[in-house]
Amino acid sequence: MTNPTYDVVVIGSGPGGYVCAIRAAQLGLSVACIEKDATLGGTCLNVGCIPSKALLESSELFHRAGKEFKKHGILVEPSLDLPTMLARKDKIVSQLTRGVAGLFEKNGVTTYTGLGRFKSAREVEVVVDGQVAATLSAGAVVVATGSSVAELRGVTMDGERIFGSTEALSLPEVPEHLVVIGAGVIGLEMGSVWARLGSRVTVLEYMPVVFPGADADISKQAQRSFRKLGLKFKLGVAVQGATVTDSGVTVTYTEKGAEQTIDCDRVLVAVGRTAHTEGLNGAAIGLEGDNRGRLEIDDHFRTAVGGVYAIGDVVRGPMLAHKAEEEGVAVAEILAGRAGHVNYDAIPSVIYTHPEVASVGKTEEQLKEAGVEYAVGRFPFMANGRAKAMEGTDGFVKLLSDAKTDKLLGAHVIGPMAGELIGELTLAMEFGASTEDIARTCHAHPTLSEVIKEAALDANGRVIHI
Image 1 (cartoon, rainbow, N blue to C red):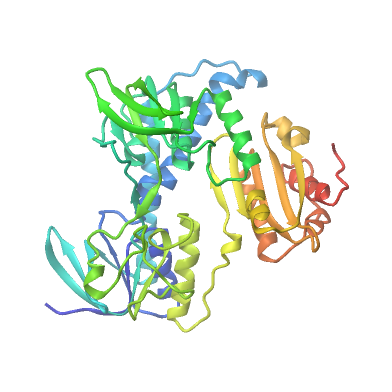
Image 2 (cartoon, rainbow, N blue to C red):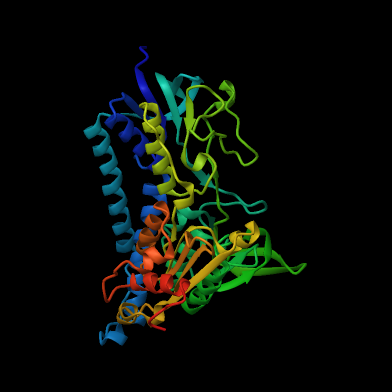
């Protein structure tokens, strides 16, 4: 068996891996990408970002048709065709995963299907059905193996009654009562989907707030909005176990020291994700994980093993597809002799619920903890003409700036199209803009972006429309 040699071998074809492979190829390097699954794109394209957003969009339209269209003078009584909704989601996934394969072909990236496993620091085996199908020699190896669904002690997932985010994307029927363990991004996105389609949804969360780690004002507003949708919350509770019964599932949890139970017919476990290194054989070459299983890297994405780099969910930082993409580009450019860099202070995050939630930079709580003097600018969507026309008045924009220099330090949006609006604020942070810079920028009228301008004006004590 010959050992093909490449300048770069990428293990994993998720957003970080496939973007890294394409950029490295564009820079003239010979590149191979190893993917353990039958389709490219990793968790994000196959069972994460893309299918969940497809269902969020479909379920929101169904909800609006039944609850809000009459405000517009549109009288309909929608009925749900769940198989068609799920088929639409699957079609979108298929189109995008095939698109990655097309991009690989266009850019000359060689694809290997199988499990990528280290034989040495510069040799990677492709394992298919337990057998070594190929051994690739590499000038450098980039580990981009992503993350897996985190498990909860005492709760065994069977994939049917008790399941994770992957199974939540393809339930064969709308649950009568869905219990979601975890009030984070995945739990509330998928909880929203099934609530809109008719489920009674109860969310159990260990922390005393929804979206732990978010700006406190955003978290409070989000919880109010979710309650309007019908979600019920039990915060500050510790789930002890879940037992499948003849009629469904019984979840046991403690609240203020007292044991409680709740009966439902399905349970979604959404307590986060963990770095995925299973099968990598990293220990054989001295590649060790930290106390959370993540591979340790320096500021240039180098692991402790010479020639081995790592990016994305398998390393430190937020588990976000676009963060992985930026790291993929940066490491490819480093390997090509260029200066790759990621500004981690300007990595946005988006939660695609209704209303959407988006943020970039520091929260108010983080600034207080760091002892930074700051100013706050706020403006509600309720006072925006475009938001009123859209029936999207829940939420606000909140800007945090340095009290002395006015430099934008953090931005938080909850409201319609927050995921699109955060782009302007991320760009402002990337260029070191002040809130006055934003306030003096002409924003089209009537648009949702005017809320950003007004929040910036508020930070300078001269808000106009409130």
